[in-house]
Amino acid sequence: MADINIEEEYKKLKYNLPDFKKLDEEFEISNIQGLEDKKFLTRFIRRKVNEKIIFFCRIVESILYPQSPNYISMVESRIFTEEEKIEMAELYKKLMYYEKESLILDVESDDKASAKYVNEVFNNWPEIKKQTAVITRKMQKSWNEQEKIENYTF
Image (cartoon, rainbow, N blue to C red; front, side):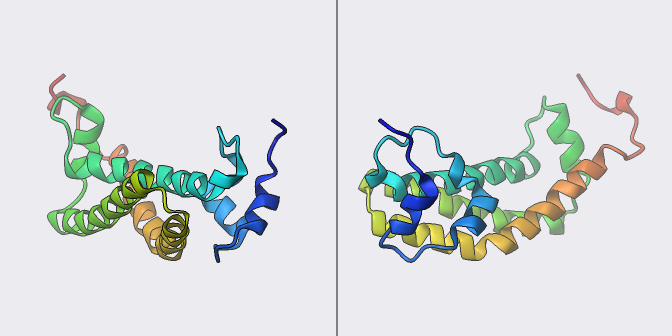
């Protein structure tokens, strides 16, 4: 089958979705793999959006629920206060809600609901992205802290 021009097919969708270029900038939808039939484009777009939701879930998860033998999680988790972790837990709940919503849509295969999902995540994305940026910057900062390596058990 010939390559599908995702941008052209996106413009033909009957659902009121965000601007293609803006959605593509955030979720790289022009890079969708495995799409062999344009009739499933809405589902594939939702799944691509959900990939980023899942990725952000794992970032927050590593701070909220660090694995004991995982040195990286231990270093990064220690820099956050309890108040910050409570705020992160609220973000985590929102992300998990979206992740499970996408799972439901994989089971029910509803393109109209998939379009609604994409719109809802896209509309909330600036705040999610802002919160995640604060978290990741602080995670990076944890590696400049003066704590000695010998304080960790390997």
